[in-house]
Amino acid sequence: MPKIVQLSRPGEVELVDCPPQPLAPGHARVRTWYSGISAGTELTSYRGSSPYLNKTWDSDRRMFTAGVPSFTYPVTTWGYSEVGEVVEVADGVTGVLPGELVYGIWGHRSDAVVPAGAIARTKVSAGVEPVHGVFARVGAIALNAVLAAELHLELAEGDDFHPQSNVEKMSSGQPLTDEDRWPWLEQLADWTRERRAAGVSTVVTCSALRKAYRDVLRGADPDTFFVFLHGDEALLQERMEAREHFMPGALLRSQFETLEPLASDESGVALDVAQDVERVVEQALDRLRSARG
Image (cartoon, rainbow, N blue to C red; front, side, top):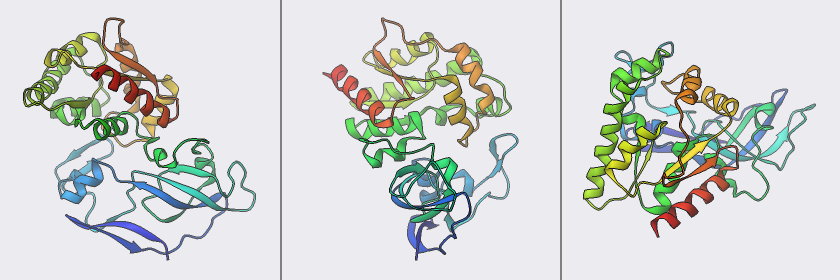
C-alpha cells in the first residue's frame, strides 16, 4: 500500500496509507526516493502557524486575508519537491523511460502517477546526486538553506520583512519603488547588524536589485558577500509561474528593468541558474569558503 506524509495536527507528522493511483493514458508511475519538506508552508503548518491554516488565500489578490482558513488538519498532498524513479509508463508514452530519475511535485506520496510530459522535462542529469533534485525548482530559497546548513549560518527570508503595504502592492501587480524598498532594506540590515554584534554569521534571501540597495545591506556588515543568481528572463518567468507567491510573474519585467548586476568592486559571485542545482551549490560554497578565508 502506498504511503503519504500527513500533518495530522500541530506538532504531529505521520506516514499513512493512501490508495494506489491507476496508471492513466499519457502518464507515468514514479516511486519516490526523496521528498523535501519546505521550511515555509510545511514547517509552519507543523508548528501550527501557517497562514493557510489560519487565514483565507485570495487567489485574485494573491495574498492572505482574514476569514475561514483555506485548509484544515489533517493536511496531505501539499509537497515541496520530490525525486523519484520512473517504474512504469502508459502505452504510447515517449520521452521518459522506466529507470530514469526525475524531480517534480507529487505531494509526498511514496508512489505517484504524474503526467509524462511534465517529468520528461525534469530528469535528474547523469552524475548529479539524486537528492539534489529536491532543490531544483526552488532557486534562491533552497540555495540559501543549503548554504546555511553547510556553513552554519542563520537564515532569513527577505519576504518575511516586507510590510503588509508592500505585499498588497505587489499582489495587485504594482512594482515597488525605492521609497517602498528603503524601510524594508533597513530592516534586513538591522537584522544582520544585530546578529553580527552577537557573533552570528547570516545568509539572507532577497532581491537586492540595485547597487544602492546592496550598499544598505553592506553597511550592516562590511564582510557581506553577494551570491547573484541570474538567468534568462524566459526561464525565470517559467519558474515564477510554477510557484505560489504573492508577487505575480507579470512583475518580472520590472525587476529586470531595475536590476544592476554586481559591479567589479563588489564582493560576490554571479551564478547562472540554468545550471544543474548541484553545480550552483558547489560554486557558491567554493566562493563563500574562499571569501571567509
